[in-house]
Structures are given as C-alpha cells and as structure tokens.
Image (cartoon, rainbow, N blue to C red; front, top):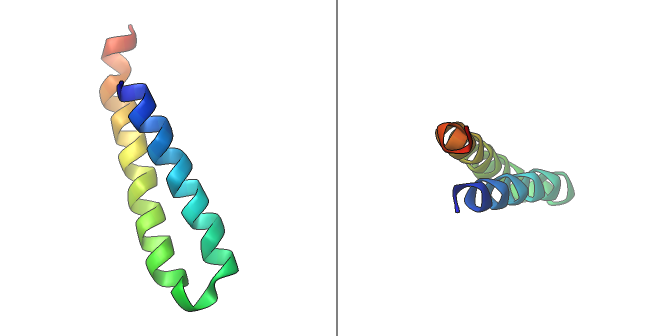
Amino acid sequence: MIATLSLSSLMMGTGLSYAAIRVPNRAEALELWSGRLLLAGLGLLGAGLPLFR
C-alpha cells in the first residue's frame, strides 16, 4: 500500500513538473505542487523501507 501511494505521488509530481513547461502562466503553482508531491513520494518510500526489509 505504501509503495502504491509513493509511486502514484511520484508519478503525479513528475506529470505536474512536465505540465509546468507547457503552461507558463501557471508554472509557479505547478512547480510548487510537483515539488511537494515528489517530496511526499520520496518520504513515503523512505518510511516504507523498514517494511521491505
């Protein structure tokens, strides 16, 4: 479950960072949320590492 949440958060963050290139008038908000999602995905992955051991 944690791996699925982490992967989906990382994928959404990657998608938003790609969309920030395409939509320059909303780039600041898209980059902000993509960074947050990427950090959340990496945080979930790090929190789940003891479970995969």
